[in-house]
Length: 352
Image (cartoon, rainbow, N blue to C red; front, side, top):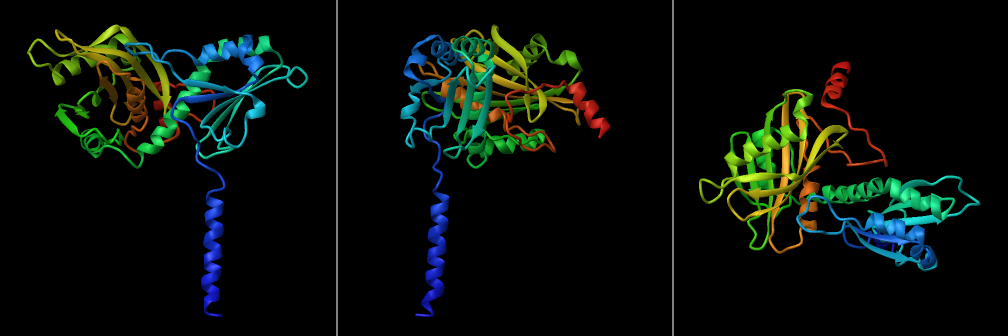
C-alpha cells in the first residue's frame, strides 16, 4: 500500500493539471466571423444598421465583391457559455445613465483562448451610430489585424521551408509562407515561390532595390519598380507576355509592421498580352542597416474562385517578414498606431 501511494499522488497531480488545462476552451468559429451581442430591437434600429453597414464592407483590392466578415447577432440574454467562446465578439452597451461619450476598448481571452472581445459603450443610439460611421475603418482594421495575428502564430510552426530558405539565403531575412508553397524560381535579388495548385495558384515574391530617400515611397515609384522587376522575372509563354500592375486599381498606404514604417500596395495584376490576372498585396520595408528596400508580395491566380481566404493567408505571411536582427512582434497591441518614416527610424537608431 505504501509503495502505491506515490503513484496515486502522481495520478491525482496529473488529473488536476489536465483539469486546469481544459478550464478555458479554444475560441470557436471560423476566421473573419464576427458575433455582435446586441438586442434584436437595437440591431434592427439605426444603431444596429450603422454597425452592420460598417462590418458589411467589401475587401479592397479584389476583382469581385467579397465581404470583409461573416456577421451574426445574438440577444444579450442568449449570450451563454456556448456562444461566449466565439473568436471575435463585439459587445454593444448603450446607456445614458452610465456613459457621457462613446468609447471603444478590447479584451483578449476573456472566455476562451485566442478570443478578442471589442466593447463599444455609448450614451445614446445616435451617438453610437455616429461613432460607427466615423470610426468604421478602425473597427475593420482592428478585427482584421487580430485575425492576421492568429495566422502569424499558426505560421510559426507550419510554413513553407522552401520560401523560408530562399528568404534567408538571398536576403538574410526570415519569412514564413503557407506550407503548400513548394515550387520556386530564383533571380537577381529576387525569388518567386508558388503552390502550383490545379485550380488556384498562391504565390510569394521577394525582391530588393536601393533605398533612395523619402521619394522611394510613393505610388508611382513603388509600382514602377514592381513592373520592372516582374517584367524580367515573371514572363509569359510568349516573349511579348509578362506580369504588370493595373495601376488604376491599386492603392498604397503607410502601415506599421513590427513597430516600423512600411508601405502597403494592394490591387490587381495582369499578364501583358494574355488573359491571366488576379489580386496582389505587398509590403515595402527599409533595411536601414544595408540601405535597401525589401519588398515581399503575395498574389493569387484563381479564376472562377473566391479569393478572400487565399489572399488573407498570403497577407498574413507578409507580417512574418523579419529583417536582419529583427524580432517578430504582434501586428497590433492597441487600437491606434503611428507610422514613422524611414528617416525617423534612422534618427532613432543613431540616438541609441
